[in-house]
Image 1 (spheres, rainbow, N blue to C red):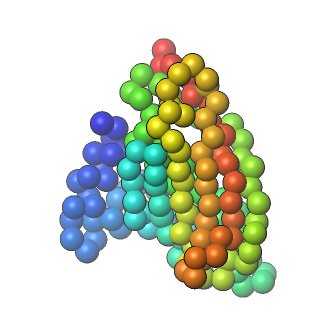
Image 2 (cartoon, rainbow, N blue to C red):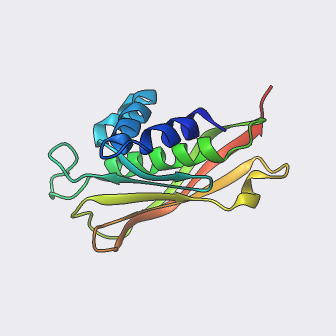
Length: 154
C-alpha cells in the first residue's frame, strides 16, 4: 500500500476534518497544489476526485476559475490516482497533457481522474489518465488526458 493510500485511510477516517488534513498534507508534496486549496473527496485505485473551491485566488479576468487552476486540479487528482494505483515495482512521471476547455467554470469545480486496471499492467510504458472537471451543476468545463511514462523501478 502506498504512502498516499495509508495517509488517506488514516486521515479520511477522522470525522469532519480528516479529508481537509489529507488535502493540506498532499498539497505540501508539490506546493503549487496549495494555490488551488484542493479538497480531496475520493482516493482509490483507478479513481481520484477533488474539489477546487471558487474563491478569490483562482478567478481569471472573466470571473471564472482560471484555466491553469483547473489544470493544476486535474494534475493533483491524477497524481493521487497514480500514487495509489501504480504497482510497487514501477514509477511514473507525467509527460504531457491534452486538454479541452468546454464550458465556463463558474462554480466550485470537481476534478476527476480515472484509469482502467489493465492500463497499469503489461510492458507498455504509456498510460493515459482520463481527467475532467465538472461544475456544481454537472456540466463538464474541462476534459482530456494526462499522459504518464510508467517504467520499472531501478
